[in-house]
Length: 357
Image (tube, rainbow, N blue to C red; front, top):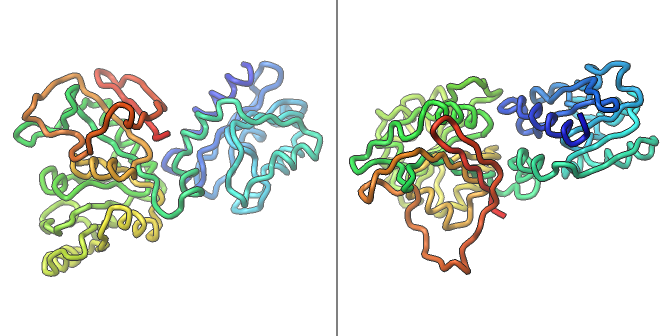
């Protein structure tokens, strides 16, 4: 195993903390001696041991004279855990390879501390992959005024999210739906538009293999406050925190009816204002699952940071409901090209993950 292969393994390990570590970053680590892996670990849960200390404990005496490969610069501060740099220095490791610097000013500076102790340090291998994996964490540090917004849509080959009669269950297959349950676990909140809430009556809960440390809140963007109290999202609002975003001029009687279910009301005159309010309530990452009008409005406003596209191998034709509605027309010279982060099959469906550049 060379250092690049060890970093790829560390990235895979880091994902085992998905849904359990936020607002901490996902971090994995591998200890190699020559070309042999002698220890590995990951940050398993918020407040628990960091990946470096887990990997070093796994390596034991094998860490002496070895190389530590880690997906994020080791921390220097004493938070819920002691500084990782101290553990690394004590271990006898002689070289550290980190995928990226830690942009958190409270934790940064680990590279300098290690170099002062005589340990060789390299930064950069698979850094783009490490940054993509922790996109929400990085966004929280760089743009705390609004949540990291990811749009997830399951569409047909011709870009439809429902048939001409409103049917959307199920466009994607079992593997894609399992993936969505895993995906939900890593976000602070899951959102839909009001029309989708009324037509699909979704639960927007996590029912997959990962039990999130904190259940994601639910957000409904419903400008006109026309949600009926019979909907699952409102009937269960006392059990799962639910936020309904309405326009300032929404009918007061309707707003009171929604609030009586236990849902929190947020009044906002724009999507950017709504996102700012959600951020103030502690929502740092938001997974938007439709519908087409909300997706189009967020994209048009430049408020989507990542797009999870699940494409199913079928066509529904012109009568089907478009996945994205209301986007302004652009010429090729003005169109924004996104960056592909991941592309892979999910049985017969295809997952494509894209980030704004």
